[in-house]
Image 1 (cartoon, rainbow, N blue to C red):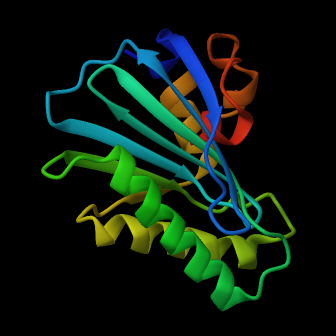
Image 2: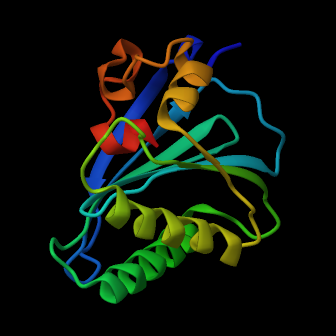
Length: 171
């Protein structure tokens, strides 16, 4: 079964308290996916300013649409991203969960911003490794092909997921 066979329901959206200069909007709801009781999946769409994080567990999802401060120095951006992931995982990933994770790799056709995105991607990988998860890092077209059956289908344009915020849907 492709994930695009799955629709989301009971979507609730709320803005979390600010995390420093970072804003976080969270969405929760149900998705008809079969995972074991302690199993879960995490997806991260890294970004310099906009980041999406998705956690799927027990037929439920929590997604995070994150807006980071723009023009942060490299080390500050890495510190902010790692602290943010610690914060989000502390709320959404119970201890003892058996998790798989995926971080979106570089879009090789995109000419601009890939170096800075590599830093965000690295922070996402380290954030996952801190909670004991060794993620796969996969090109965006490969993720879309696995999820939607086509590497050209964008998550934010997928009809069954239109209630989800764009970066959160991409995660």
